[in-house]
Length: 413
Picture 1 (cartoon, rainbow, N blue to C red):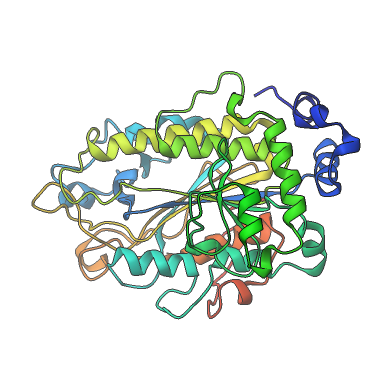
Picture 2 (tube, rainbow, N blue to C red):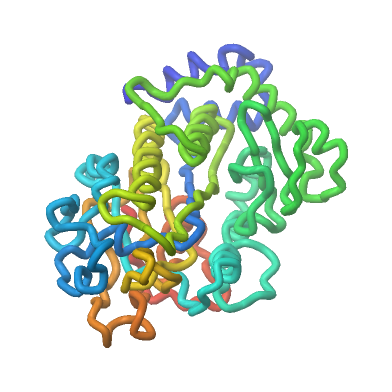
């Protein structure tokens, strides 16, 4: 937690290569970091499989919750109370200090307004940013980058690592005309171009074999960025003092995200995902399948927050999931495909330590189709504020076409 931008720059790759050898766009990034003018960052995390918002952020103050879930509800005595009505699942204790410090907020009864219960369709709609429309060709996060003002585009056009997805193929959300990279592993430099087809190769071979016009004109700068990243010896990366990531794929991806951010390569947007949330059978209450997943999930987020050190102040993390679970547990002590869920917002600019959104209630007549938590906050309302604040892009008509934003939630200061 004690690491600073100045110390990192002196101890990192910049001093290994020397400023005279640093490409211009990397030199600008280094100078920005030194003067505290580094770009703000947005990290988007997709919980694939439909996360059970009711057992993640528990409405323990509502009696109907316990009636609907006689075997999988989290007992009141185990819930980590947040405000007297809502509380965290006990496996998420790692995030309590972030909440207490005012850097974590939750938006309950949130998600996509489309009523589909298909994982594939729902994920596609949330990544395209156009719920119910299957003909959208690009992703909303790519459009958020593409639609920036001319000044912002000029400022960022040379940043090879401006938009990064952790994975072997670029996800739907980052597909489009704006340049973006899929990084399979920071240590191996496995990447894929901005189309959704995987490509296990080095940066050099990617660009040599690429016919993609979006990549033209940036190859040499990308090679320079690779050299810079290699010079920082990514395989020997160690998190900040006192930080310990859990074991698991998601934790490793967040550690690599911190690694990229701290390397001062101009990272502005990062996307990653974590699966395993489709708990139809034996979901568990305070212990079990969901609890095990939440322990890694929350521990990874907390470690990432600590690992960033001062850079956390300019970083915002937002989570989303395609839909929630049924309010009632099923006959297999699990939950089926539902509607609304919960979103987490964590960051230096977050007005945290409080819940956001309107709680619809769990009485039978309050449920969506008399079975699911009703949706009261469209995920695009949350993302619109994050994009405007972190990326400086208020052009929502280009990012979320057809969406009529009911207003700002004031999640971010």
